[in-house]
Image (tube, rainbow, N blue to C red):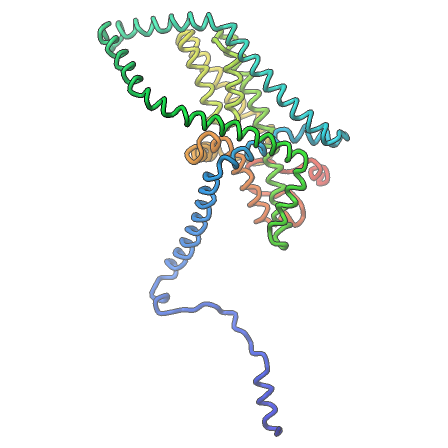
Length: 398
């Protein structure tokens, strides 16, 4: 090989610089204004994200008989977690801590049901008498009120009502099988939720470590950090809602008792359960107490019952929740109402129940990932829905 050929061979095998400019511009692209191109780029990405979310919601609805019991188990685990973790820190055997948590929860629920049944039985004769008086008063109002209905007109309306019920009898009978199926689904879901709860308490850490391994190796630390902050958020949310529900139930139930509204204890239990749906649940169950007072005690007692409900709501919303949340920024009440309404539209009562904790988890996990706080293990700072700073890190930062 001659000397003049060697430089040419070296040039053939020499690595050529790779251009990093991947932008390919065509005449059609140049004809479109830059702002419109940017808008279109955002639009198709948003459509892709919406499609992924839609497919996810469709899968959840398809597997709702599995998803709802699992979500119930996770929420109950978050409710029991502070007491369960306290027992583990004080060297309780894990099986003993699980048994105490489950038996204690069952005892509390059984006690509440027994109190409700006891008061219903005790006040049933008085309620029946009050109901008869309320019906008589309503009939007098129909006669002498602005409607001025006669006995024959009232009888005709009653007959029409019975005729409508008879027309729907066949539909009600045909729906009996569906009701039986629903009851079977409820029983199956309850057993599945109980089994999931036991598994989460017994080996929640192992289940989560296995779940993290489903992600790529490089993404595992970020996923783990974001999910752990989200879990602390759900625990704090559940603890706060339990406290708020207890205060709402005591306040409204005590007000109903002092105003001599019938079935004050069942109303308190109903308020307690409804308060786990933020804002909407407490308002709806408080309206039940006002309605009972209006029917059985008259408009003035109903007005005072309404004052009690509003006072309890104001104390809870403006004093108790800010103290429980600490310095963290909570979600705006309008956002809570929209999230709860959207969850109810998508999945009914379960959607309304799980909407806010799910939104809180997603918010904190997203802030953790975007801020990079998962690298240091610190709690994310930013527009958080609930406080996620654990006590150990608070002490370390002081």
